[in-house]
Structures are given as C-alpha cells and as structure tokens.
Image (cartoon, rainbow, N blue to C red; front, top):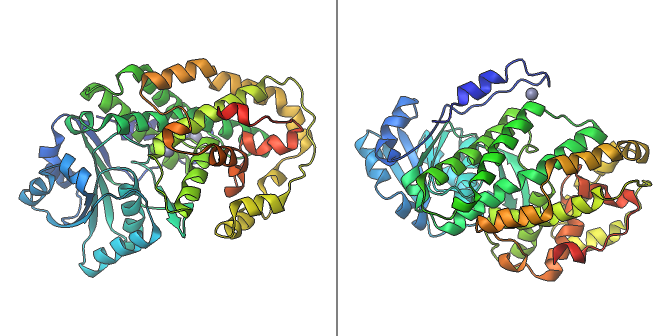
Length: 430
Ligand SMILES: [Zn+2]
Ligand SMILES: [Zn+2]
C-alpha cells in the first residue's frame, strides 16, 4: 500500500517554505481489490449516494464493481459513455448537473484519462466527494487536483477536486491493453524534460521550486524506467508499480500546488497537437503516447542546446503576427491573453547569459542520452515517432516550434528565441 501519510509527514517543515498538503485520504493498490471496493470506501467514510461514471470499455474491465457497491450499501446511479476520449467543459457541467438534480454526494469514476478529468472538475462544481476506480495505468492524472479540460477545443488546466480515494486492482491493471500501459510509461518519461523546465525556470525567473518534491517525481521515474522491459507483459507486479509511480507524480503536483513536478514542454507540445487535431474534428492518440514522443523530441533539442558552450542572449524579437496566424482564429484570443505580458519578461538576457553553464548542467544531469532514452522507450513498447501517433510532419513541426505560446510558463524551449541560435528544427523530429 502506498503510504501517503508517510510522504506528507516527511515533508513537514520543508525548507522550500511552502506547506505541503493533500486532500487524498487513501490509495489502495493490490490484487483482488475490486471485491473490497465497498469496504474500502466505507472505511474512508465515503458518502453513500453515488454517481458512477464509466464508459463501455472501462465498465467491462471493472465488471461487477457496481454490484459490489450496491451489496455494500451504496446507492449507485450509472452514467455511461460509449468511449469518452475528450474531457470537455460541457460534459463536466452536465455531470455536475446530474449530481445536483439527483442530490448525489459522491462521484466514482471507473476508468482513467478523460473520464477521470471530467469527473474531477464535475465533483468540484457540484461540491461532491470524488474517488477513482482505476482500470489501466495509462496516465499520471489520477491523484491530481487539476484537470486539463477543453472549451471550444482550447485546452486549459483548471483547478479541480482531488480524489479522496483511489482504488487500483492489479489483476485488472495487468490485463489492460498493452497500448495503455505503454502510454502510462510515456507519460512518466515526460517527467524528465518536465523537471529540466522546472529547474531552468526557477533558475532564471525565480519561480518556486522544491527539491524534495522534484525528488519524489524522480524516484518514481527511476523505478518505472527500471521496469521498462516488463511494461507490456501481463504482470501484476509491474502494472502495480507503474500505477504507484503515476499516482505519486499526481500527488507531487498537489503537494507543490503546481503542475511543474509532472509537466513541461513535452506536455504543451502534446496539447498543441491535440487541440489542432480536435479543431479538424480528429481525436488524438492517447495522452501518454503523445507525451512520450514529444519527450524524445524535446530531449534531443535540450541536448543540442546543452552542447553549445556559450550563448549571446538578446531581447527576443518575435513575429507575433506569424504566431497568431499559426494558432488561427479559434485560439488567438487565448494566446494573446497568455502573452500579455509574455513570460520572457520575467528574466533578462544578462541572467540567461550568466546562468547558461548551470542550464547546461541541469540538462546533462537530468536527461539520459538520446540513444539511451530511445532504447528505454522501445523496450516499454512506447510510441517513438510522430507517425506512430498519427501526427503529420507539418503538424509535428508546428507544435514543436509554436507550442510555448499556449502557456504563460517558462521552459527551455520558450527561451530559444532569446538565445540567438539558429535551429534546424526538422532534424529533431525525424
Ligand atoms: Zn518543499
Ligand atoms: Zn501527463
């Protein structure tokens, strides 16, 4: 069992100065837990009138869990999707509305990904308690207190409700499709470049950073990398360990009250690809698969930057008209808002010049070599090229160059226009 209390206790009086707290009461990962779902929820005092939200696949994977809940004294209404692949604001409002109308006081999300994210925000809106019965170790959002939600196809991370209980039955996780397990691995791999971005930003903008929280993510990442060759096997041990690592990084985000411990440029690139495909009515590949591919690309670019010994930073001269027209009419409003003022105003060319040796050191200390990373990912069955995830060469390149402007967040990629380095972008994507 994952000992959340121990983690939180170990962070009391943390030198970073920020109080580290979580709302989560319990995380239970183990064999055959489905049969104990009602007992576990009762043990944590979870409310009895529930809305269960699932889709056809996740309910089939968790077959029998609703009966277990009903037999254990829970009144359970079911809201079922066919196959929910996008977490949209309209659905969050609708789920919250059902809870209010039927006077339900808890939501159980049976599944992963978009199902969890939709319920996470719906629970906050309806002010109900929230728990997750996980069906696959496919992404790191389980324990998160925020949810990336699309509104008019633009994806924004919103404050949401952290689940009070997470239940993961390893016999179900192990049987999850290999593609979902590899996706979870890809999402974890993204922490590599995410941690580089957090450290670089802290260095040059003074953004909040906590070494102890970064270490939590890093330790979880190290364990997952050691399990890479077993990710696609039907192994309860491997699936359970990956689940635990994914949950820890979600907890790290809540502890640090920041997405930084789990997400950097690689996530923003993935979101860019996603919203641009959605704009054309296309559903993207799984989150963790896109993040994994974007991590490889970012890692190549970061290594290239770190190979440059000295830079001559200048105030950036961006062609904003080009940036706005690339985002297009659906997104330009958000992009303008997020860049007024733009995040590079939080540093100066002098600071970047002075910090460059440390930036190079952060890259080299945090990231494995490109070859090593590629072979780790291949052994875990993860996607490694944009064609694996059905992203065209044009969209692939566009996301890599233009993604930084869809967030107000300092990252190593966002610095490139200040560095005066000519980039041959194409070679990092092939
Ligand atoms: Zn701290
Ligand atoms: Zn992620």
